[in-house]
Image (cartoon, rainbow, N blue to C red; front, side, top):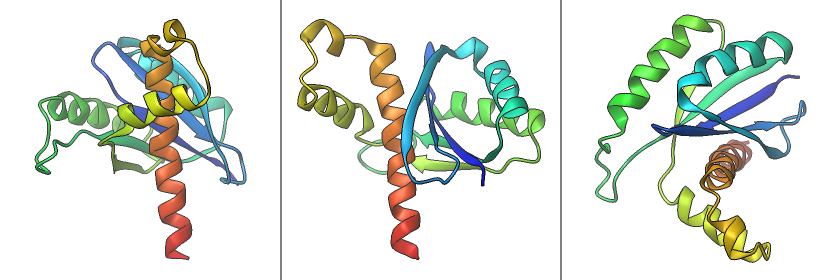
Length: 140
């Protein structure tokens, strides 16, 4: 099997998470500056089998798209052009940052570590991916 990759897209930096090859476990991979994200992904899929790419869908509480959506859509269009053989899906990312901070608290991370925005982005991507995996299992 191949991996599923998830992205928590941000204007400055983006968190990335991937599954194992059996698609059972979501793991944080890294955080990259957003201006390097497309090339990072092209390089990653060249060396690792990736079945699908998930991108966090930025929605507001009222279910409308956030202002960041125009940047996400532009990125996704570029991504689809660069890796046309890999399907790209949106996954609702509401509350992922809150859940990431809670996970950091539950893990006992010190305040300084919890202020690491790159770590928050990576954990958010992991939560996006885990949410997708759980919804996929529920459909079985």
